[in-house]
Length: 115
Image 1: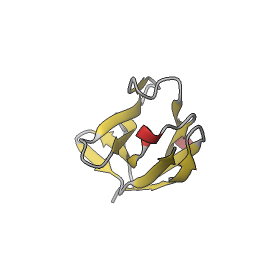
Image 2 (image 1 turned 45 degrees about the vertical axis):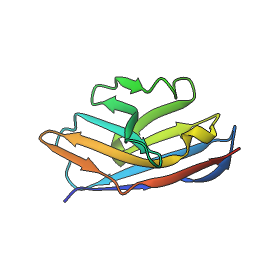
Image 3 (image 1 turned 90 degrees about the horizontal axis):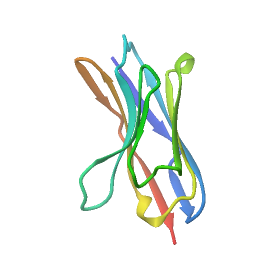
Image 4 (image 1 turned 120 degrees about the vertical axis):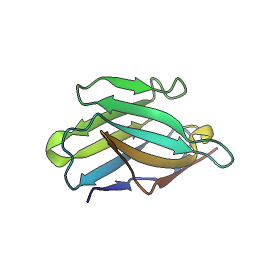
């Protein structure tokens, strides 16, 4: 059974940094992509960044130049380095792994950015 466990969230002041980690346990045969999504109160869940098996990355316009997604294949872990954080980045951040035809989500980790 595949499990995704996020860590690294917390409270930080505007301008600060956090690094989120998502450790994937279980059998992932050949994932299509790994990514981070977020959901703020009263808003829909949105893509923050993802990375394909081939290493191609995609970012939401709102985080380009500030966030970096990366992965460690040996550790089955995907990271999200978040710099220059803004109050509008406050949300629950979710890890997602697409391993066709399966689609896995983590439980989420809270990120709160104070002004």
